[in-house]
Image 1: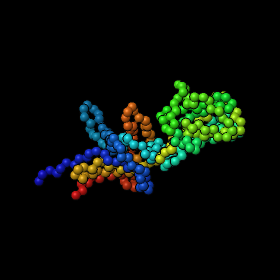
Image 2: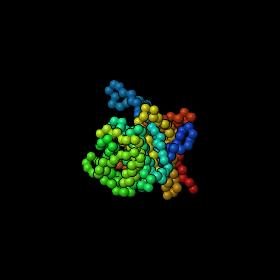
Image 3: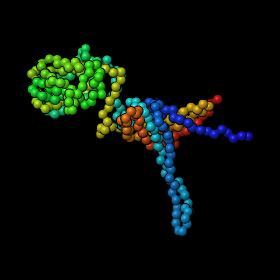
Image 4: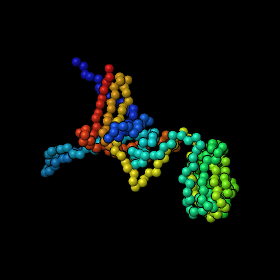
Amino acid sequence: MALSAPRVVFGIHSATFYNPLSGLPYGTLRVLGNGTFSMTGTTIELRGGSNRFPWSIQDGNIDAKIDITTREYPDFMMELFLGKAPTAVVSDATGDVNGFVNMFGTSIKNGTNGISAIAPSIGNEASLKFGKLILKAVSANTFDIYGISNVDFARGTDVDFQNDLLKINAAPITAVAGAVTVASLGLEFTVIGIPAFIINDTAVLDVLPIHIGASSAVVGGLADVFPEFGCILLCQQLGSGEMVEIDVFKAKAIGANLGAAEKAFSETPISAKAYFDSAKNGICKITMIKPV
């Protein structure tokens, strides 16, 4: 009788995260650099006298850990690893302006003698550019607009920075009662009464262009909660049809890296600690199968 063919594991297919209470999935990661589950144990040695070797070795503690490198960023990652479920918007056919607040001073956003609201300009929505803008009072009735980045300045009507201070408009914008339109930015400013800006006062706003999907979350809050989760790792299916599934019953992770490198797709390592599930009397279930 010949030896059986060796059992091998090749590649990573997916990592699916689920709620341990309901069993329902949070979502799945498919664009993975790796997905591994490791159990690293320690041994406790009894030593003494002149013996160069241990008299006895007994079992110590075991750390069980999931390590994943992902190259995609679905919304559920924020909830599990950053502690805050994002607010998601499926699409927006007109774009949006939000977060309009005074930053320095109180004279720019003003419901009596100033700018009461900012909204997409009807007919110019295609020129809304993603990013944060800052308004700065130049005189009692004029202001300049500054940007944080030019990453989206080519959308709709092109604009550019006027100087190294990141000012966008060439000449100060005059605020008069009614609607003041800055078509190149796709914005309409609603001005109430006679403006009484105080020079150097500032206000900020966030702009979202027309889109088919967006999400955002403020992380780091005192009430943020990092939920426990289950994770099923699926290795790549072999040419023979063999598959390997690792179902980690309970785990927790805190933190993730965001960002990117020059001319490279972003990736972030995720590390989660697994722990004992009393109901299932273990920490994971490993299934290896060779279908016919």
